[in-house]
Length: 85
Image 1 (cartoon, helix red, strand yellow):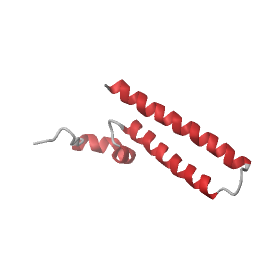
Image 2 (cartoon, one colour):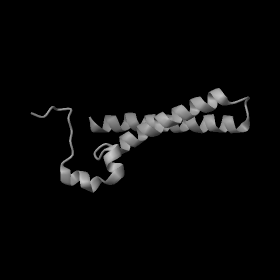
Image 3 (tube, rainbow, N blue to C red):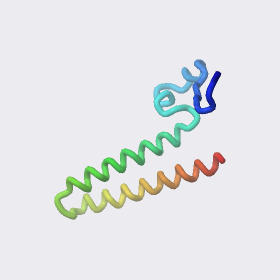
Image 4 (tube, one colour):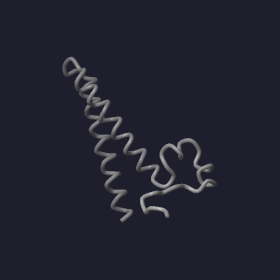
């Protein structure tokens, strides 16, 4: 008996996905990649935030870009979730 939450790709379809398709999934790959980008950017932002030794130009530019990318990704994630419903 298969549970509703268990989604397994058919063997033939798994071969068609390739390496990145197997890592990120086939059906919701773009959502998984966007989530991964958001998490990586938050980690990088925390590292830069806690290791910076002042308010240099690089830190300011990086924080601005990171916040922009994180909000873009979150908008995509919530917008794609709404489109599926």
